[in-house]
Image 1 (tube, rainbow, N blue to C red):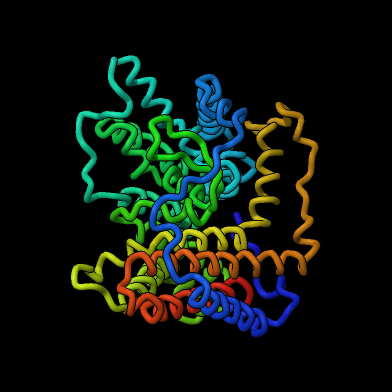
Image 2 (spheres, rainbow, N blue to C red):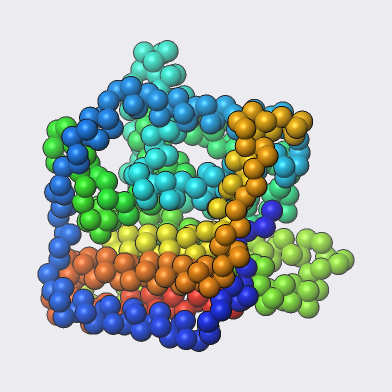
Length: 445
């Protein structure tokens, strides 16, 4: 199953001009911020405006939450059904549900609606049912979740997913993917029983990913009010509330680095490297080993560049440099979203639509359960390369500009006054490196 959206053939404008414009946009943005944004605006959570009363009542209604849980469980049971009894073939909708709807589809849903995966999470619902049957509290387990673990379990889970998707040679065979999903469900249920629902907020890779994307939405809950009322506020204000937990840099590095690697692994450069260095032929293990090293290398490179960019700055006497990457890691979230849009837009629309069509025929018997089997996916963006190229470039550049703004505001709140601007230069260089590398991988590799 192909990933990504192609290479330079999709770009009807010179790559050099695109990169120059993107670098100029970041530089101008930083200059404007240095002049016009001299005090932190999001050091404290913004109040926001109350959401419309009818919407708040709907979202807070018990029946509405039950409906969302039912929707999540129905989707889970359908996926389990096609995983267990469907054909071991790419026309089985299970692969599209796993690789497209779950991995990519929840990003735009979370941007539009907030933390959707948490609301429909089947493992949370199963944990709730177990707690009700045993008389326990789903929010409390038998143990306290170790604070030092932070988001590290989610980072490992995310890496396990991208490894399955991008590296594992049998990623489109039903047995291994079904086993991965079974292991995910089992680990989540055991973790929920041990640590309660707090485990999912820190360890469920899909919930953590969805919740991070939701920080770029306009929806939020007022944490300082007992009722936690629904409010509408700036996505930048929401982004600033991302908790600086251990493992946050690892989570964002896995998301960013894996997307970059997905662009690179089908490039001419990579294919020639594999072929010309004797990894094909007698050494069948060679490509798998090198690809594993490359994926890990991309993730570690993102983490290293970001860590260096944040730590090469002046700090106060009570500020450890090692804490700075985590404090600034929220600024990578809009960059990740920008690359997801740029890299997976046509993949989501075209393969996602094909998956919805295939879902009408879960067992590949010619059935038409939902009346969609006779439909055809739209290839609008593929037939309009200029529009596609513009969307890709804008997504990447806008993601980096928003990241620069978020990092600038955090620097004003954290760094000593004499380092608030000059201290950001190293991070700006890192952002520019991400932009140049990302655009090159998307269009020229």
